[in-house]
Image (tube, rainbow, N blue to C red):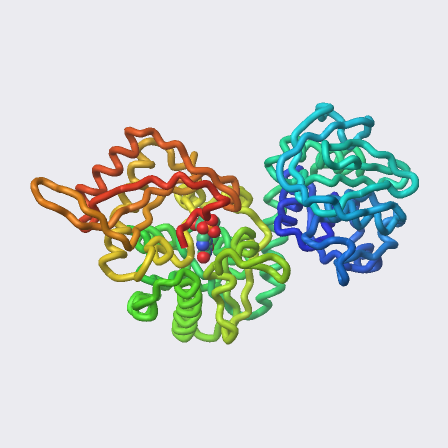
Length: 505
Ligand code: XMP
């Protein structure tokens, strides 16, 4: 099977490169940038990709690579920082740019090469860099430029070394995927021979290895991520798996019952932890504090569940890649602590196993389909681990939960009736802790607003607000104000991500 290694130099979106390679149906894994030639050779990769990264090659301690890899005859593609590093190691010239270049720009191809086969002479690309290549290393040709970057792509066909300054992995580079395919198929001569089903096999094997002879719990929330993780774990360890649903009292309407029915053939325990969660959240309004408390209560609840199950040492979670990246890594900044990643307390004494940690939601859905999970589960809209708590701006009280839950049920029901459920990433309600004046019948009201949030997204990392038909918004608004007591106003969130995030907290 074809095998590509992405060497990671710390770019926030470096897993996107791996994901694009998998989209091209080539097996791909990410390894630390400084992995030695010997360790890489053990894996017998067919090609290497050097990722971007936030550092400057001039910084002290900037990430580097084993230079011998560049003369090992492995087809290699450098991206952004990867290009600068390649240039510096091979004797070219890299200089700090007068100004950091960030955003869309126009790429002009000046030299024909297999890398750009089928790509128009001029096309849009996405740039984000502070250093530029001023002179290519000996034996390289300049292949393309942009208005501010004279050497935006370079190649040395004989040594099979290629590099681009822009980011082919992001959607803002429309021909980026084509270029990556050219690198994989035409330059490295790989065949598309990897399928999501293969991921099932490798994940099942990995879970078997990690769990060994022990027993495991799987954290089930009813969403697609945890359902797929549970199904994989069930395949791997069968009856040594117990599924646990922590009912934190912050689920959507009927959710607990639906999960109970959908997973009736598994050993499923429902741990009612609502009193503990709600008590711990009393008086808390700060979003990160809420998330940390919820993370802590989750672990406590699992510990209680474990006592009822017997000796269990492993906890399987459906953490997906965007959860990991948004919670911050060594080099990337924390946006939010996702409850199943950064929210974990240090004293959690489980071996945590996250089989989907490197996948994006749509890849998880593909695995779910390949596993034969019911469509109602596979196509469920994402729901955050901390549940409705992060959709209540301000204190999480029983009244607030009741209002946001009811409004959420109305929004999702109307979206379903309109046939839009699969087309949009998420549609839900957010409750705000401000009040405004309204009039109902002949009386003055002084109630809370509900925000309707509906977004389109590929993977949750970026998102656009959905242009829902006005009639549909009108129907939702009238129903919410008419049916949810305490709500007298409905507003529509028209913020994309970035600069907003999808959830409000
Ligand atoms: P944000 O709000 O960060 O959300 O733009 C991106 C996607 O992730 C979901 N989300 C979470 N999922 N645990 C999860 O499992 C969490 O703590 C969490 N917070 C946000 C969110 O619903 C959206 O789909």
